[in-house]
Image 1 (spheres, rainbow, N blue to C red):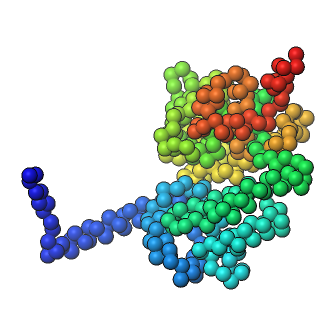
Image 2 (cartoon, one colour):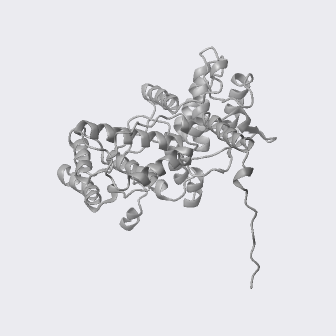
Image 3 (cartoon, rainbow, N blue to C red):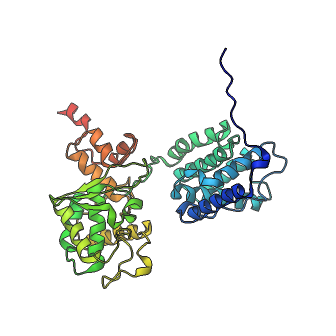
Length: 384
């Protein structure tokens, strides 16, 4: 017979004030640390009057929401922004109807989706995003997910088919307009004067974005310490995290690409510390205001850089890719789409294409390749 193990238990009388004080100090230190994390700076809607008090799942849901608030689920800031936006929008809609927001009743939810489609002319993918965020909120609450009821699922499965029948056209999800290497090469010739601060900064952002396929959120948060110049002259960009992994591989720049980034670092980043962002605020005169060096470049600023580049090439009469499957103007995602398509045309394998953009599967790769010309379509081989 196995020996019984008796673990030493702390008697109640031995719990001293010093132990309790230490416990409180740890909680305070942890809370102070969280104040510096971007996901804890987001404000969620006040839902104190949004739950039906007679909802059987309410006590359990509130407990899980409290657990979620402890660390915000470890979700990314962008995910939390969208979650807060959709929950707030749904809550406001329910308040206008004088009904409780939770639990969600399918007829109210469907009427909301229908009104957004008919009255506000929202795209099908927008409705899908709203549904996904409400589903995520149910998952956080550990509550029965009303968004997955058959009546809701059938509504969404019919949307695209109904729209195609009514309009006689495909319902295509618009992709970012591709920014190709020949576009970048043109801009290297136009914006290559390092003495014009903003233009050279813009060129550096575009060069780095195309050469690495980094997402705009990562580009804006590159610190000086992340840039490693190798003996061969190439540049390694060390990465902390990405959308798909918390341990991403570094990205490398070579040739003209690394030369542009190195020149930018030499001219405009000499005064920055290792902890400061290389794309923090840069004035027209090339100065770096001290109070903004710890502020990363926003996605909106990166979008504006692409918009300026698009307008410049369009005004000069240079070829700017056009097509019905993508948006009208370049945006922060355009280099990922354009570089991927260039890689496909250059003969890279599917595995290499997936590695280019840190995708987890071939789904996004195939989606971004959808807008390519059909000049090399396999069915043409049958017609020779």
